[in-house]
Length: 102
Image (cartoon, rainbow, N blue to C red; front, side, top):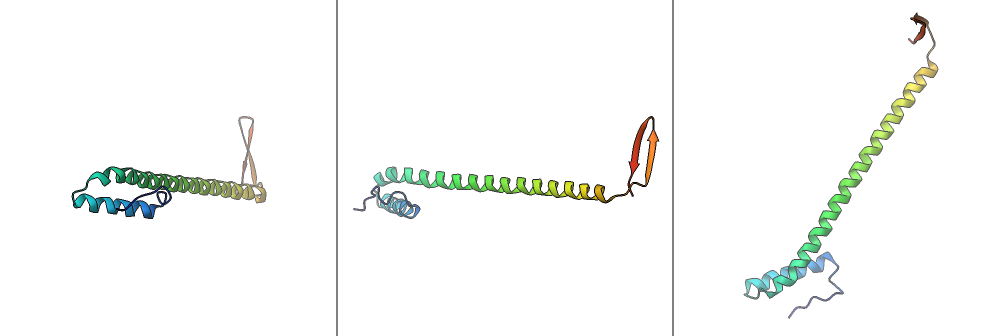
């Protein structure tokens, strides 16, 4: 009879092999192995869900960084334009001066 020891319990490959074995046993009338296989399915499921979450978190982080870089680049471009601009006209409206830049 196939046994499932703690040494190979941690690899996804061996978990799948054990689940495969348990399904075959159930098809032959021995459903006892299904009870031992269910926690393995749950482990694989949790691992996959965690990887999906980490992937989504990474995508959000990369997207946020892209927005920050884009905003920074726009601000730098606007500052550069302001530094290079020459004042062509100063308009006074109600004691306030406004500068127009070409």
